[in-house]
Image 1 (cartoon, rainbow, N blue to C red):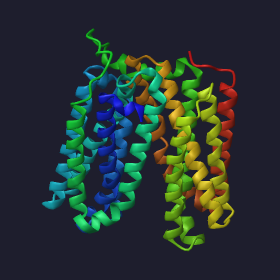
Image 2 (spheres, helix red, strand yellow; image 1 turned 135 degrees about the vertical axis):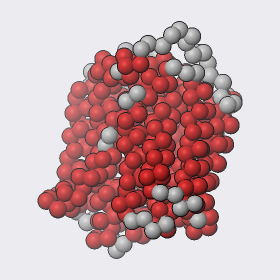
Image 3 (cartoon, rainbow, N blue to C red; image 1 turned 60 degrees about the vertical axis):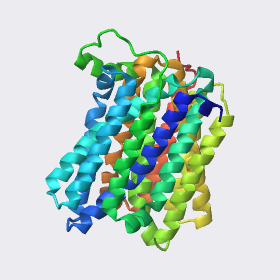
Image 4 (cartoon, rainbow, N blue to C red; image 1 turned 180 degrees about the vertical axis):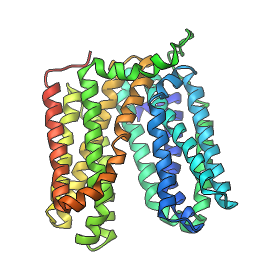
Length: 394
């Protein structure tokens, strides 16, 4: 826990944990709140989908926005706007406001999230000495994962205890507390006082950075493909498989919980394992995801599925941590917001892939679609390793 001795990092970690816990409960709370007010599944999809659209749109320009302001001001401002958006959602649902207004507020929340993620990721290496980047990334990931897993697991009980609208109000409060914590974050390497470049060229900077080094675009593309496989095979078809082959939601809940435990174990392993070539090591462990899809397709025992889910969680988390450490070591601080915006864009671009699950299930069947996810994950990992086998970041 050496990174937590550095005050700026400790405040950053505290803020990330608080906002992660609040945000993990928000989608379920919003869905239940809309249903309680007489809206149907279409309204729920429109509200949640509008947020995703805003995230994808604003990630294109997030780096250019961040570049124009001091990084700490961006963190505080995005937390305050997120708090305002969730407060507005609460008030609209409490007063029975129109659906279009709820959707508009979700667009604001999505735009804010798109700016926040690259800003928060870029702030980490400016709160800690370079020799502590690995344990610092592990602490952040463990804290955020623990908060998100715990809050998500408790979200149903919280909705029952506080009401769906009450959970949204609590999420707004969590963002306010995070904003207070961000005001205490003191960053090294003060923001440049020179005039930022024009907006459009600045918005394209992330694409230029990623295209300029093979390991960057290969890792971003690979992450997008494995996230697409997870969106289809786990998030969309997982509940279908649970209903048809696993005797309902309880076994599937166990699989998701064990995968979460794999995330935590992967973080702990990443803290101790210091590979000489972290890019290649991170790509290699994503092969751990492939068995989960094939075993889901083969209707094997629950114990085997739990083991595969744990292994998948370990591999995914080790990939993310190795990626973050390599980027923070080799990309200049001024360019990190641009690159992290493109990284997030690649990852979030996979989310709409879940919409392909329905047609794929109809035309290919459940097992064939899951086997396709296996092939996509494994082939992407092998291709990425071959493209980067002799490559070292410069």
